[in-house]
Image (cartoon, rainbow over all chains, first blue to last red):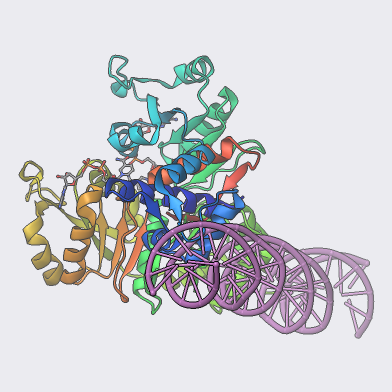
Length: 213
Length: 213
DNA sequence: ACCTTTTTGTGATTTTTTTCACATTTTTTA
DNA sequence: TAAAAAATGTGAAAAAAATCACAAAAAGGT
Ligand SMILES: NC(=O)c1ccc[n+]([C@@H]2O[C@H](COP(=O)([O-])OP(=O)(O)OC[C@H]3O[C@@H](n4cnc5c(N)ncnc54)[C@H](O)[C@@H]3O)[C@@H](O)[C@H]2O)c1
Ligand SMILES: NC(=O)c1ccc[n+]([C@@H]2O[C@H](COP(=O)([O-])OP(=O)(O)OC[C@H]3O[C@@H](n4cnc5c(N)ncnc54)[C@H](O)[C@@H]3O)[C@@H](O)[C@H]2O)c1
């Protein structure tokens, strides 16, 4: 399954939360298409690939659909995540309250700078050396890299060797991983550059999909 | 030209900076391909679409290539950017030193919370009401939205009406813009969800392209 | 001077992704 | 009960993106 499809499923799910809050019980492929910025056929095809079906003429039941999407996306159970590098981006992620309702829980931060250590906070910041043990002990599978680019590859290797399988990387370098590791490189500078290119050119509109940069 | 192509050009440029620092004078399509994680044919095709040519057998001259890419990407002149919403993400962006060498300069922040105001800093934080005037006066064309999702659409409209043409949006909502506006939605929650999906499934490896979420 | 090697540049081909279009099902209306 | 209307679900078609593969150019060797 392609990344693009999964990102769309997440978007449908987010749109559904909003629709639900607005009181919608049923939803049609073109409502979701509008909300997410794709065609209705795309919505239906995406669902069809995961065996999600609605009712002809009746559309989809919001509550059911949310549940199915969350199941597919692995959001039916809490996912624990650690952050390595508790600087600007790292602490932004640690303090973000929006992850909770998505069943994503940031459980600890790690840094090499002793000034950052704070084992007593709700989300403790521990020394990097403690990471391996922590990951093994708690069975952590997902981590965020928010260290300077020079340190990123090395940090990646420690994380992977400790047992982490999925990584969101903010360092502006294309990290490469082993076969069984998932790495999602998010390069915010690139995203800005992209905008700069397009405003200096004819092609306007919403640039979508693929942060993967 | 597709977003993916432009993102790749940016990546080539970044890879070239590193190669240059390492002392490389010439570079071949497969060096860049390796660095960025694409095929050599892709590199050459991308270049060919922008009329960039190298020398058969001799490859490309690093310095020339960097210059051409920066020209195409609009990085040959400084681009001023404002931030709206000076919370965690907004201040992370404002404090990030890495943008300077990319000719991206964050010139001001805006917020509705008076506690955030600080007109005397190098990068001042001003009240939201001042944004329109500031943008018009300084001819700002690019802005970053880092406000809560509920405020995002409204903030977008103010920014666009003030004359901003390109927007990087961190609020987890698919902002829609007018014809001549470029909006790049970056949804970090989606990027994490994506990782969670893939580690719970067979498909592993580097997830790339498309932050656009 | 000629042969060999290396690498580009790109048309052709393949693969992937999206959109079309319509038969089918369900609901409503009369 | 039949006809009309509104959606889905999905093969087929189209469009977009990536890869192949090879002629051509440049460099070096003998
Ligand atoms: N802040 C932004 O807006 C922004 C924008 C684009 C890219 N980035 C990238 O995101 C990453 C983080 O940026 P930031 O602004 O949060 O940086 P930062 O300097 O604020 O924080 C980096 C943190 O990593 C820690 N660190 C350094 N080496 C480490 C190591 N080996 N192990 C563990 N911790 C280590 C430092 O002590 C520090 O706390 C960087 O790679 C940066 O290039 C940031
Ligand atoms: N922090 C993260 O790691 C993270 C992760 C995913 C998504 N996001 C999204 O990024 C956005 C910013 O997140 P954050 O963590 O920086 O939030 P934050 O709460 O730290 O900061 C938001 C800032 O926006 C200001 N604000 C609110 N309404 C405003 C308005 N109408 N005009 C101007 N300013 C206004 C607030 O005063 C505050 O300073 C949010 O939409 C959030 O959902 C953040």
